[in-house]
Image (tube, rainbow, N blue to C red; front, side, top):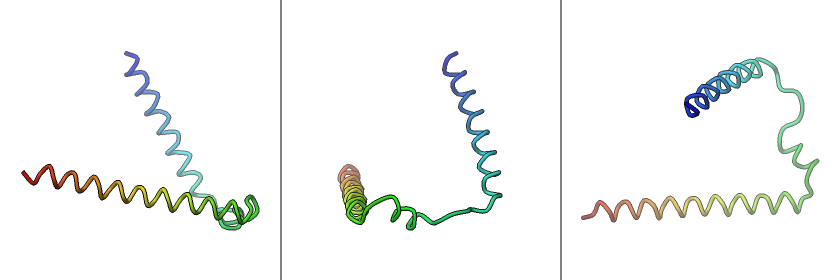
Length: 78
């Protein structure tokens, strides 16, 4: 019963979000782009460190994908 109520609430929430998203897409964006805002909010050093973290995470994700593919190939080899 609790799961049903949760799912019912979740569906309602998603419908509301979807409706608001459609309404939001009808308006024009006002303001700066992310690169300009980022320069205002962060120092060059913070931006550099953030970019480094993103690159490291991306590299780790790719390594994990390759390792997973290799495991799958080895399983189906036999």
